[in-house]
Image (cartoon, rainbow, N blue to C red; front, side, top):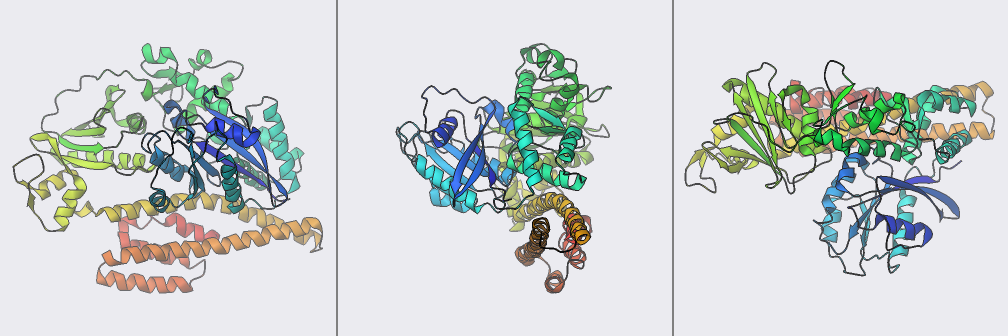
Length: 618
């Protein structure tokens, strides 16, 4: 049977009219006093395409700031995104690019439709061409829509229908038994079931004649993509539970992070025992409460600590605003990150990620003091929301300062990458004049141009470039920004490909099982055998396309890097590219690894190890 089902996700700031748009699309109704969505609401929307009914699972996300931290639980690839804007507000007030980057980070290349709502009060003007060029996954704009006046709603429908038609998986053939399981899960959700253990899920599959574990694992990923349920198969603990009702998770998290006692009396500390009175006992029985805490840990909202690990948690967003005494930091090595604006919760995430280095519980809502592993260096990391910056100071042993600073910088790079943040400036404070800063990238550019001295803006003194750079990063470690971007791109490729490989391994096992099944019964033209053969052909086609795309990515990146390589490396790497074009799937991984070593050196030779390993599967 064809899939004929997809997931649509509505995102945007609070009070822009997401729920009103959804009500217009599905029911053609408008309520001027519509309550704000708290958390997530999911509705079924059947549409007609080419004389077939397509069922859309539409997710309506609350736009309040406090809810943004949990949205990442549910933003998925292989979906359609509808970004709703308030035409009365500027692009900045709508946080347009924030949402586009959020979608880019978690939705991959999922198509996006941008809807400018409330045009009855004011039309919106955007750089339509520039936005599409910068974010090519934007499929279209609906420039004038009004739920109140019922303007532009039909256009929104047509744009969504067009995006559905373009989804590659919408016509995938899936076994009838899978639909039986999906329908059963949806019935259980309608009857109030919030979650389902993996054992109960497997029992349900077996009762519906899906008995092989590989088939069950493929199906659970399929259901996750459709938005029928949520499954975190890559997590050692969370993989044991499937979420049917996402409100069960969000309401549990909100109950914790909004609880007054944790802020006023406990300074952010919560135990599993506390959850007994914070969470509803019936809806969150004792054996389910840890799951909520583990979800918060996975998405960097809290961390576990103490002798009874996993029983006591710290929620940094609930820490006191009052800054603690951190001592003197005169003469410390400094670095700053300048944002526009400062992302909400960025220090909370940093505290969670770096909690193993916290010095003597010295932390508050906007800052933390860290200590190096050998105890010889300390670092003060502090956010200033008014100035939209994070300031870092490192003191202690001179020889260890730069290494400790690099550890902190590496963690901020990861935070800035998920979701991807553009326009973050890395600033170096001047010695003895810390209020005057210079762009780190500008210093790198000066060094590259051979300029040894300069006069920074805001001072009349001449400063040497090299000492300012050397304080932050060793000369051999400094690379132009484009090389840093290249490394980030490669990391993204590896991350995306890792997810593909997991699905590919399962698919390979399924195809192998299907071949045996066909051989067992002979190649008769039965409906069952025909369906199995169609699945096999489709899998092989996807394999070859994926292999071809992997080789294409390698060639594209080599072409970009080539001008920066030494002459002997250029010749050698182009020779390898020539061999790669003629290679089969077994030969390709070794060639890619050789190319990677040439580009990045021995230290980076494992960077494409996942891709190389993956090509062995294809």
